[in-house]
Every structure is written in C-alpha cells, then in structure tokens.
Image (cartoon, rainbow over all chains, first blue to last red; front, side, top):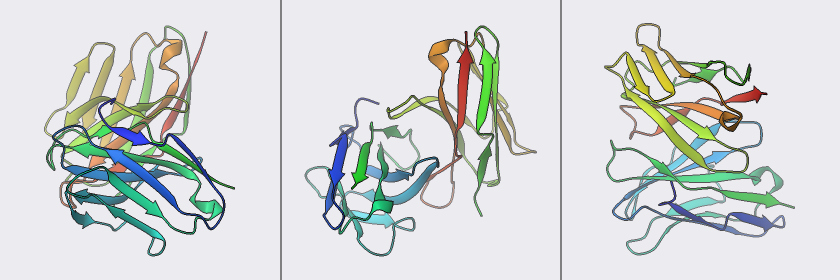
Length: 113
Length: 112
C-alpha cells in the first residue's frame, strides 16, 4: 500500500558497516511489524512495535539487530556490523490497531558486499 | 508450532482458472490472507477471509476456507499474464500479538 513508506528502497553496505532501514507508517497507524524475506524463502516475522514500545521481538536475531519506533518519526530497523547473510528484503507493515488490516511498504532490499 | 504450507509453483494457460492452495496448523487463526508480490515489488493485499466464513468472492477472486481441514484456497478466474506473481498465504495468529505467519509463496506462471 502506497501509504507505508520505506526508505531506502535499495541499500548496499560493505561487511562490518551499519544499515538503517526506515518505515513511516500510514497516518494514524501506531503498530509496526518488521519482516525479513531471504532469497528463495518466505517472510519471517522479526519484531512488533507499538509507539515507543517493543511488544514482541521473538523473531529478531539476538545480536546486531535492534528496532525502535519513537514518539515522533519513523520506525527504524538497525543492523550493526552487517554480514553477507543479512542480505535480504526487509518489509514493514503497519496497522491502526492490533486486529486491523496490515498495510505493507515496498520493502528495502539490503545487499551486503 | 505455527506453520503455513503452500506448493511452490503453478503454471496455467491464459484464460484458464488458477487454484492456489494453502494449509495451516493454527486452529485459533482469526483472519487468513492472500497477498500478491510482483517481481521486485512489495506485498499487495488481495483479499482476506475471517475464520468463521466458508467462502468469499471478489470479482475474479474466490477464497474457500475449510476450517475442519485447515485448508485455504485462492481461485483466480480467467487468469491473465498480469496475474503472474508470487502469491502468499498468511494467517493471523489470534494469540501471539496478532503477528502474521506466512507460507513460502506460490509462484504463478501464466502462459499465453
């Protein structure tokens, strides 16, 4: 859905650098979900945030990955010291409430070289 | 645990009907979704069905839900070349913060 904006659309990082992925929700949406789509695989849940709070991070790798959704501004998925295995498409979805329709962004395609 | 399964590939001729199948394991699912992903693009919600429904029709799309067998299908009537894409089935987990559990996607190829 065009209402969810992710940027950048494509991101190239060298091994060891940091990657910051941004997700601006549809106006009025306060729930953000991040998903990762590895090559040849389906989407895997990473983290669920609701304005300033991490609700569920059961899908996040234990190290190097973090997410935030500040009171003002977009949600950020941060990957420190990237490795080749982090290369994937990262999608965010936002909802107005926990039980409402999820709208997806176009995704950020991260390539680690 | 939670699991959603789909066949990986489907090939049909233009004008025929396509049927994409999906099975899931979580009996407490509330909503079941079909998303479409075109090459290099994001995910587009096609349709969804609430778990107390058997069928939902939306123009060329028909969703059938067999809750007893935990089987969901998407039928596309009069399939066109523009329908070529990957189709993902997803269920909304009623219990665990409502996250979506995804299948691996079915790649639909439409041949002229």
